[in-house]
Image 1: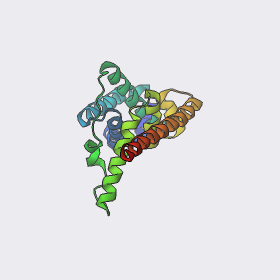
Image 2: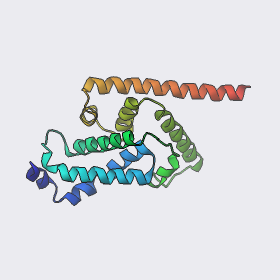
Image 3: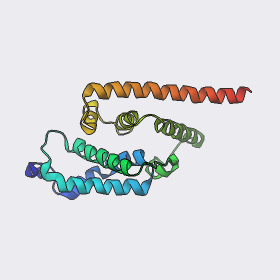
Image 4: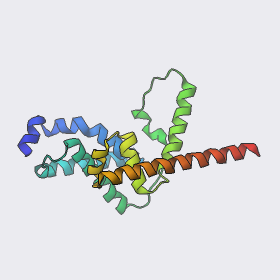
Length: 182
């Protein structure tokens, strides 16, 4: 199977070039630290290269890499339970830098930061599905493969995660309204 995989990819380097940014962005959203995300991304690709012979082609190479990245994140998370939250500003180099309206850009960035902080207050399963679906734009089927869940569990958890996130956003807005009404 390795030869089939490698026929599509001229070299391991091309595979790395094709998916590095995408895997890095996923891991950065999970750990919120650039250096750590880079390390975990490197670990992901080392594991992928070492395990390429075990790739059976039952899923896409992209899904297989996301699965390795997800498991690499989980292993790190279990070792380091001191999860730190950082400002979304550290993601700035990956964002669009040309804006027509600086005020709108600032407000959007503030809103994104608030949403990300609220996502990290949700339980882990909800974080996983929200980030993979909304930020990484994986399909339900790809998420099911990455998380090793049934499709129904992905859909249920995504629905519940969105409802929970909406509740958190509404509560935050209510708290702000209450603060200014006093």
